[in-house]
Structure formats: C-alpha cells, structure tokens
Image (cartoon, rainbow, N blue to C red; front, side, top):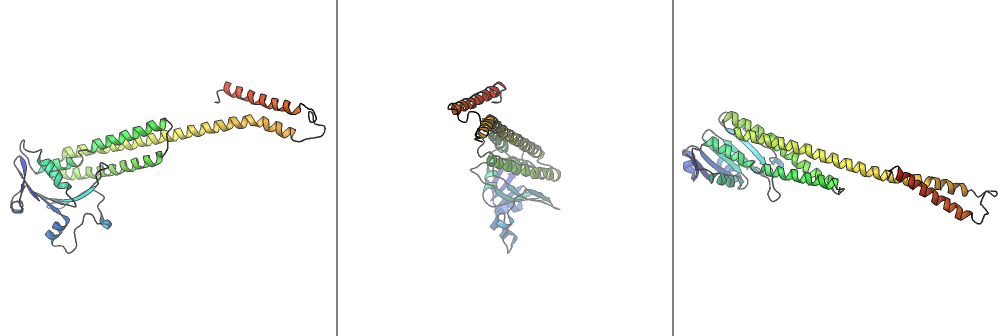
Length: 294
C-alpha cells in the first residue's frame, strides 16, 4: 500500500507515483519486502530466534533505519513489530500485520487543516505510538492504589504474585520509553522533527519511574503489615506462655508425689490446687489487661 503527502493531507496512491514522486509512504509486509530486495532468505520481524524486543533507530549516510517493538498497552491487544527506512523524500515501512496501516489511516483522517510535510507526519506517527500510554499508566497507578488499600485492610493473599506482575510491566514500559527517548533524539537531530515527541516520551519515562517508586512503597507497606501481624502473633504466644508458666510450676511441684508432701493426702487438696491455678490465670489476665498487652 502506498500513500503520498500532498500539501495539507495524505492521499492513497499507486506504486508508480510513490517511486516517481516525493513525500511518499510505502508499506510492505515481510514477504513483499523480501521480494523487493531479491533475498534468498526471508526478511523477518518475527522469527522466534531473532524476534525484535527493542526499539532502535540507526543513522546511516543517506537514511535512517529503525526496528521497533511496541509493547501491548491493553489486555485485549498484543505487541507488534515493524521496521522503517526514513529517506530524504520518502518512508518505507515493513510490518508483520496491519498496525502501521491502521495508524496511517487514523492520521490521514486528522489532516486537512493547513500545510503538512514529512516532518509533521513523522511527529504524528510516533506520537500515535504513545497516544494512549498515559491512560494505561494511570490504570496501573489505580491498580497499585487498590492493592495498597487491600493490604491496609489486612487482605494480603497473592500480593507478591500481583505486585511482581505490575513491577515487571512497569520495568518493561520504562525500558521502552528509554529506547524511544533515544529514537526521538535521533529524529530531532537528523530530521529536525519530533521535538514534541521527545518531550512527551520523556514525561512517560518519568511517570513510569514514579510508578516504580510507588510500587516499592506499597511493597514496604505490605512488609510492615506482615511484621505487625507476626508481632501480634508473637505477643499472643508470649502472653499464653507467661500465663501457663506458674501453672507448669504448680503441676511440676505437686507431680513429685513425696510421701510427706503437704495436701497429698488431704481430701480437699485437688480442688484447692485447681482454685489456686484459676486464681493465677485470673491475676495474670488482669495484669496483662491493665498493662494493655492485648
């Protein structure tokens, strides 16, 4: 599929106009581009052993070449890859599906209000790659906030698994924005375009960094809640142990069964010792309650 930037809009054109004119945009799939280069081996963006997992824009003498891995931003969508040649008067995209075509058609519907050139198209295209990212980062922030509330309410089940997934996602996005920041700098230096893109992606990177710090803070809150819970358990066990220590002493003392031992043959010896044990428990409970140990 071929497009051409004409004055104030983007129009669909044919191959001849793309090759002979200027400000053209060509979109090829992997098979078509392999045939264009007359390669024996298939040019691939998605082979398992060489799959693109990064964004990079290389500078050459007469053109720029970039390979991009755009991470998924929503659960119902998936990541996609594409490559691009940025020449002086045209662009060539190689993609594995139809995402680039859909983006260009979306940009095409927004043009038509003034002069439009290749630099502005590049800015619009790369801005479209991160258009919904701020909403996705906001959804991650809300998810972390919800986890913080559940932790404070004492619900810590599966916290580590959920937090690990969020931290991995934030780390993935942070690396993506770092790479796209470098891409924006190359475009701004070579094509004098995408200055706004560089600023925006830098803000996305800062937001991702803030989310990483927020996630760490929530994890610290979780660890604090776990420590408090463990301390409460240890306090309870300590109270129980302290209460039963004098009872253990009494049981051990009267369990020796010496012949001349007091109360051994007294008919009221057993109920008296039982009453003493209950009094010891009551006194201990009163003391701990007074000291606010529980």
